[in-house]
Structure formats: structure tokens, C-alpha cells
Length: 359
Ligand code: IPM
Ligand code: MG
Picture 1: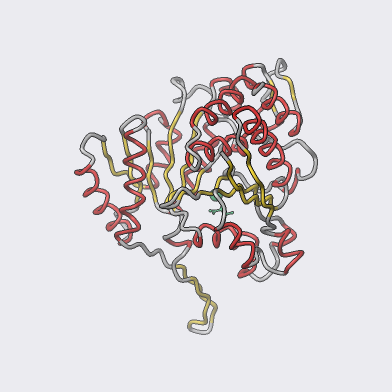
Picture 2: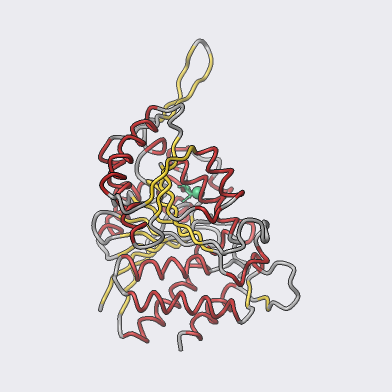
């Protein structure tokens, strides 16, 4: 097969981790007889420096006209001071919204080999951890009206958390369908004791729960979810939630697994076009040092193969290769922990190791 991928390396460690993921992708191409054509587009600070905007209209078009998008990370202190409307993060939100990427899957899986790297050690994760966060990505407070204004002689600001029924229903369906292929359990996270948008969220989810009666369903409040994730994360299979709650909870959940550097994500639309990226940020403090963990990006490529290209065997091969490299004891700094037996490797060495497992 021939697939065209728009590659957005972005800022900070973005370019380094994406390079490793592309190495792995090419290896898969070689092994399984596919060609992956890459179109490189500037995004974030890199684009601001060149063009004065975090992504150009032309760049955005190129994201729409491909089979899939791969992203590193955007942002950094250099661009924290500029006009908020032009910040690097705006480009990411624009791509999500323009491509209709409403469903964000964030698998939170603990590799048994990394148990020692989790700050929680064995509490509550004795039986391993494998949950899927389904985050609504193109609605809610991120995309409601933002405004800063004068009120009673002082500055005021507001951000609107808006949801309509169809937006809730389509992300709910993604969650229930995902649960059917996994542990058949959905927790829907909201703040229905306070927010109207959450009351509507709950109403729509209940309707779906009746339709998907083979899936076990529960409502859970967001604050309680934050606590339960620490207390007993094993109780969760699929968690579905609105945009901002999902942003916060997925960072929390990632730490249960040992490192945010391991976590991939897929942002899906109603077509096969998706965007794939690690959930971590651009880590400007370690940029250019070749020490970042590329596995979150490499596992994002596995998700791309699985969800956009329906290349299941290829996706399994990448995940297996990552597993084997960890079993061999290779670790980047973030997952090295205190174990003296692990073999510490650089970002590019980690990419090479995964490739070598692919034969
Ligand atoms: C994420 C990030 C983004 C978000 C930022 C960079 C805008 O934190 O993908 O989780 O908040 O969605
Ligand atoms: Mg986030």
C-alpha cells in the first residue's frame, strides 16, 4: 500500500522523537512492502519564526489532503510571551478542529517491565494497568467563546463550556464501541452536580447506555475520578469525558504507568483521517540533547497503522518490538528509575533498537 503522511515535527523535542518514529515507520514499510510518503509542514513556534503564524493556511490544507498526520509537540518558553491568539498551541487546536478530530484515544497502559518506574509502585496496580481514555477533542471549554473584557472598572475574562447533543452522542459511541472490543465497561466522567453541560452529557450517555446494554456503564464525577485513578486504577476500562477533564485526567493517568513519555494518542474523525501524537509536550529543557523518550511517538505510529490504515499486523509488530526492547532492559532516562541493571540509551539508540527488533 502507498500512504501519504503529513508530518508536523513542531518544537522542542518534537523533531528528535518524530525522526525516531519515522525510522520505525520506514522499517515497517520495508518489511511489509508499503511506501509511506512524507510531507513535512511547519507547526508551532517553528512556523511562527518562519511565517509569523503557528500554522499557515497552506500547511493546514496539506494536513487535510493526506491519509494521516503525525505530530511531535508544540510550544516553548520562547513563544510564551506573544499574543495569545498566535501561540503555538493555537495551531494544534486549529488542526484538531479543521480536520474534525473529535475523538481522542489515550491508551494508558503500564508495561510490566516499567513497574519500578511508577511512583505508585505496587499500590493499586498489582494486576497491571490497561485503560483507555476517550477524550472529546473539538468541543467544550476549549472551543466555546473566549473573551476578556472590562467589568465594573476591572478586567474580567470568561470561557464558555458548550456542548450540543450530537457532539456528546458521537464521542459516547466511540467510547461504547471501544469498550465492546476491550473490557466492556464504560465510566462517563462529568460534573453533573454543578454544570448544565454535564447534565446534558449524562442524559445523552444514559440513552446510549441503554442501547449498548452489553456494556457495563457508570457515571462518575470528575473529582472522584481524580481520586479513584490513584486509589484503584484497575477498576477502569474505558473512561469517556469532555475536552478539559480529559486533558487533565490523561496526564494524571499517564503517571500511573511510569512515564508520560510512553503514552501515545490518536485523534480520530468520522473518516479514516487521523492525527497521531504522543500526549507529552515539547520538553524544551531537554530539546536537542538526544535524551528524550521516543516510545510515545513510536507507539503513536502503531496507532496510526491500526486506526487509519487498518494495518493490524504491522501495528502489532511495532508494539511487540517496543515490548521486547523494554524486556531487554533498555531505557531512556525518564523510565530508567533507580534499577542499576537497566541499560540507559539515547533517543536515537532507542529508535534503532526498536527497528532492529523489526528485523
Ligand atoms: C494535550 C495538550 C494540548 C491540550 C495543549 C498543548 C493545547 O496538553 O494534547 O493534551 O490541552 O489539548
Ligand atoms: Mg494535555
